Length: 102
Image (tube, rainbow, N blue to C red; front, side, top):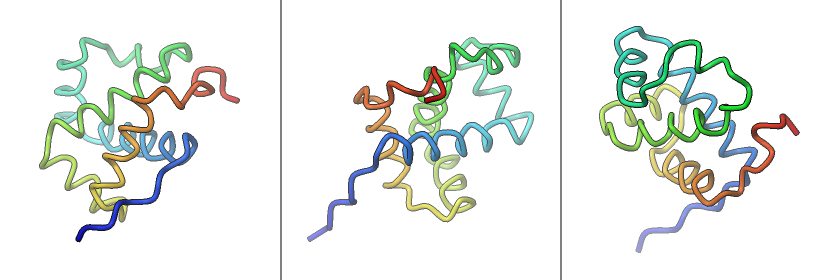
């Protein structure tokens, strides 16, 4: 029987999403594909008011690209299920402080 992973708080989920965004922006071809999918520009990534959406989108993108998800998880010493849990946590709306920096 598979053990359910421990729940993540919004700070831990946000940390994983920040690491995911850093990963996605570290290689031009990966960043280009991410921007193409989201319709954003590099400038969009620097707008403080869009931080929550960008962080959530970084996990959305990883969850849709299994090879990237596995590479990201391995590079960060995470289990892919932890990334999925962070994704669910951010989607659940438990991340209300992300745009304010609180």
